[in-house]
Length: 354
Image (cartoon, rainbow, N blue to C red; front, side):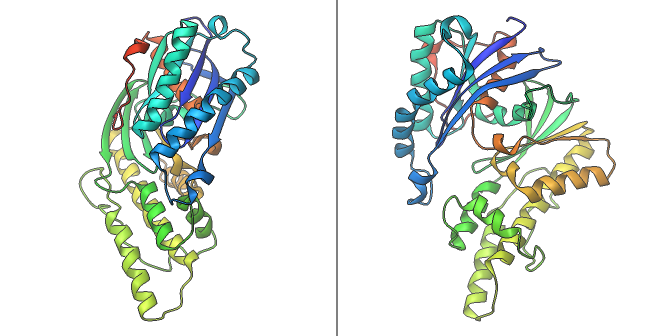
């Protein structure tokens, strides 16, 4: 690859239609990324009435939005001749909703054929890891020291990933049932907060008492790094039932704050324990729940207070949700190793792992 590699990435794993153009340089040791465009079309309003993402509706919207997103991304990035000015295409092939993934794949296949560009099959979760490399001002971020641990927290995943180097990942812990983001959404529905529930609950929690209710911290003392949030969700359900039956006054703010604190406690305890045991130099936070202010602040404080000599990398809040710039950043490392695929053989993998 050239010293500077310009990648156009496409992301349609769920309900955001996203296309980005990112200029990458520096190689494996000093990766630097300049976001030339990062277009995202949200479908929140479309799915709000259903209380969750409807795969076939998401597919329809992706098909409608992709051509416009491409036009906007190329124009903003000042790409006049994609076949000459781009070096590679990257497309998310999993994990995600299969109908949604296929829309992006089919679109990418047409571009690859027309522009004769090499294609990277990208992993959505790897994108959430490398999102921390995309700085606020398009300048190189502080170097990440390995080994590192990534805490990936979203609506569909809660994982602890040991990273020995870029492209060398091993999942050391994961949820056995509900993901943390999924639990946020389900508790939000219990509280009748609307859609999308998780972010609304987090905003409500800011004005609540985090110690009003003593909710459990599932598996916090287990001998492994796995998670479980099903029991916590059930505890909130029973608490709400008892409060209503006994006509005990309460505020949704306090329920939200106490629930949030239980989730954050669990995530941080497991992450810190793994970091100590494995002697890592860096902790990376990624995924949609990485936007949660309490998780960000408490994880920062915990690592600082314990003086472990561990650096913490937090993604820009605007890049915690699904976007194509993060897909381009992960694809760069694969492009450096010439890890390309035949565009005709691209396939959607709903449960693709790292």
